[in-house]
Image (cartoon, rainbow, N blue to C red; front, top):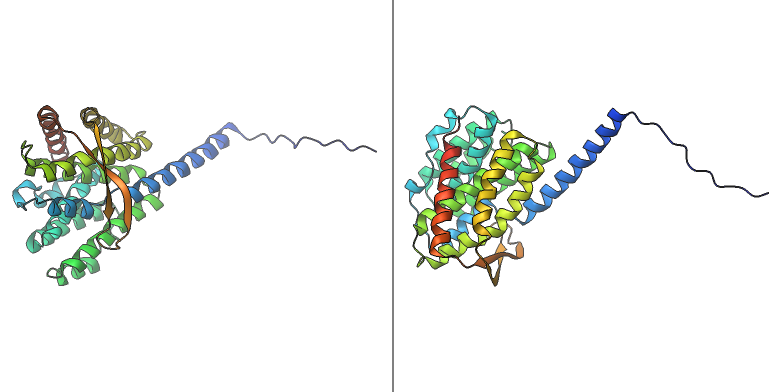
Length: 285
């Protein structure tokens, strides 16, 4: 007797359940992709140290005003400015600016509490930061761990919208710090190289924002960053690639940063647009 193979029975899944299953898979893919991107992006600490090592001089006047934390009322404003303050904190820590570190950490604590990610920036961490203000290595380690803890808390709880906005705020602050130091002077080559290398990281951030662009606020930020990308794509790569070493773990990220050629017109256009976006985020309530 011959046995015929039968096709498996067709199970009729209601359309609402199909959509829910598809959404679950989409969310997982989005989360996995976001994790991969975060793994290669320089952290605020890494970016701050790159600028410092390139010869950037510390000036508190080029950073944001830390006492505005209570003014931000919407979750979008809080997330963007948590990113901005996170970069300012990292920049101050990289230069051993103790009073500014305390000020920015206090502002970050307010915003992280409002966003319900207070585990990363706990009172215990704040105490440890205050105890290690004169120990720069330990201070950088504490801030780096807090950054990754906050990122993990957001991604693991599938709060991709908030995570994307924090990342965007941190990036725009880092790029404006570099551009303020350069001050439209092409002779500031070492620092300008660091600014140019952010063409690559901008492309990664656009991927993160695009993944969460079903949120209206993220969609607006995505458009802002696309306008910056339009400027960057007119800056060709030179072929030079650079590794990034994690200042805390010593891990090496191979060849992730690349130099670009920047003309005077490119520089002015990028500076004007980046400053405009940054000021818009600081003015949110």
